[in-house]
Length: 156
Image (cartoon, rainbow, N blue to C red; front, side):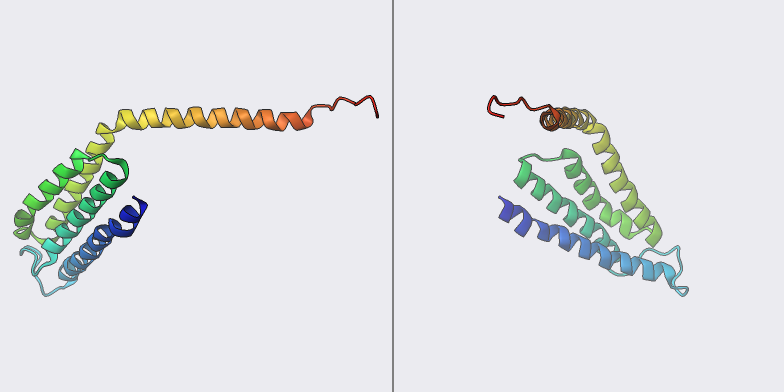
């Protein structure tokens, strides 16, 4: 399982980061170029690379989560589908608007996960706190044994 997760399933995530970086570079070059009007749609493959990189990263993250935890985050599935559907829309938007659309969708995904997983996160924090306090009590009892006076043997 570790070989699959850490050896193979990180590759789509790394590919997603690279694709996003290429798309972001193209978008930034277009925005920074004074000869390109800012109201025109993004030129070249910048927008598909930008959105495709984020889709690839989230899919790789979902595969990693499924392989290690056997769970699937439906909020991420919805985000991937929304990102895929919004690529043609973003291709007709100005470069900064396409980047803003991508940012809004990913922030929405994170906000939805914060709300959806709130109960599980609270339960996990409670278990971690219980484990920590139990461990600290055990350690304190162990240390206290070293400070107790030793009983003298009759031979001393």
